[in-house]
Image (tube, rainbow, N blue to C red):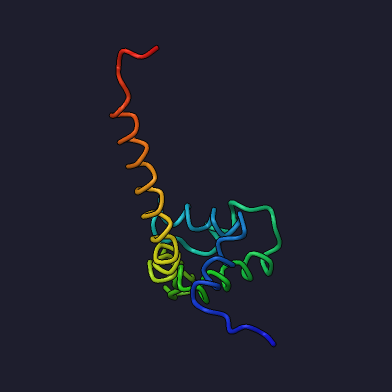
Length: 113
């Protein structure tokens, strides 16, 4: 029996590739960019790069708009929100553990060697 793929599954699958993570970084740092500009950062065939963009679009992490003959890609938060929601309980877990460590360190006598 095949499990149903959730939005979080799509998000994590999209982030599994270093190429796709780099595309997200480029869009975050430089804003919307034409596909040719994005592709120029990678040594791969255009169809392969287009497949990476498709995965990011389907995960809701980027959007595509046409401006004349160019296709502009823009970073979108929806897909990244899925990752943040999944990670939130783990963030709480670590905050509680670090708070416990802080309490332990505060309780130690500063004069002990």
